[in-house]
Length: 640
Image 1 (spheres, one colour):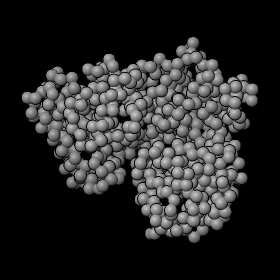
Image 2 (cartoon, one colour):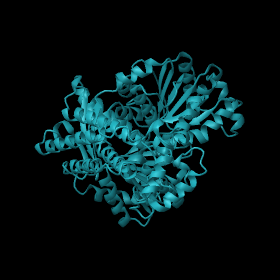
Image 3 (spheres, one colour):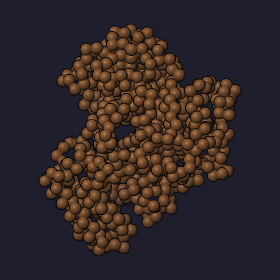
Image 4 (tube, helix red, strand yellow):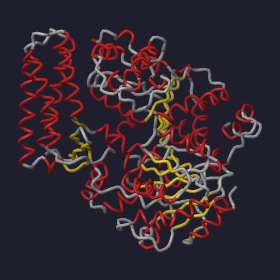
């Protein structure tokens, strides 16, 4: 059945004239078909070029019986992938499988316009940024005609536009059924539509947000399903840790103070004491942030909370929160918004007490600071038991797939993190001919990471390679500091366009990279994955070093603590496998199609000088290897 669907005379070939199935794609689809029929768990690493999207959509749709009320949930790693799947790939497979059920796209609440907050924002009319007025006009005009309320529909509105938090809601400030605009609420409409649909496309954050809501006993965001597909599944452990933990932030506290001040100015103008208490909360939150005495960063809250100066701020914030709660109590029932604020201050006070005791075992207590805000966090050392319990609750098929799940052919790092010890694991190699399409270089005589002057040395050694590549190069960095140093150096050394992450939006940079056709893009973070540049527009990928996450990074630290408690080796059991998976993601940017050719350069001699280097080398595609940059230049010179 499945094999015939992918055959040269099958359903896909009939609607896609140039479709050509791959053996690995059919093997993946067959395994998923079996998992769905048996209601079992399956983990599939499908390397780039396998065609994994069609491989999981076909059996999922062919097995979905809408007459029996069955539902399919597909979760992706980002909103961009979510939209691509829903708007491009899913319609093709719906047609090919003749599936006539209903499908829908559901995002998190911060993607939908909140009419109540838009009206409130218009009343305030205080614009600190000159472009906020034009953004407001565009949003107001769009709001009069939109059916979905999805802010992505607003033309030319950046994803990070400063106005968005003011015209969308969060769990903390949503009034729920008490909201005057509840009947027309876009997020309620979207969730109701998802409850009725047969196929629901979501993202990982929304999946775990749903679990968090279900744990409170107050409803759910998405329906239970018969089949769950997780694409880009390598992201799940980190996201699960975020949602299975708790946090209290200065953003939450200052937003609460703002809500109370709004009630004072619009409904209870006689409640001056309440307004003063709200201002005290705002000021105490800002003072608490200053007490960290750092521009940004994270660390152990258990240790930091013991500081004498921090103890004074803890006492002060506790007093202010208790006073505000007392003042609001005297006015309960006079305002629906204020009653909601009372629930929030009660919740925050209880959480603050749990955070400041920092005694609960099995959790990591940590703080994180940006330039203006702080957050205090409790993260479980392991999410495996809780996630496995969720899988066991539902008699469903669970499929987890990504191009990067294994380490040296083994899946135990991923399956251990999520408790998927009974899952069947399948590894599928890419159909690409890496031996002919690529060259892998670890250059000789480079300084080790951390050596002073490393950025200058990298610019000097690699500028000729980038010239030979005619630009068409990604330089992926493991830190913003190195990224900025390299961009500055290459702009002095090269006449080619040098694009830098952060100077423009991600999509704008990608569009410019493709348009120029001879650019160097220096980037970090988000450009390591989810970026698909096909053809010879991208012919060279350079990585500054092995992407080891700092052992002080909170989520990694929590897992390392857990490994140590269980008698394991934190470096080899946790930090090393995570670095392998991250490196595989970066390497995966190079060869994206059967005609692509390119050079991979990793500027870290530890790959050949340290014993653990073999773990990385044996986890990467089988590319021809050299240490000679001149061979890279020769290879690149032959690429059209």
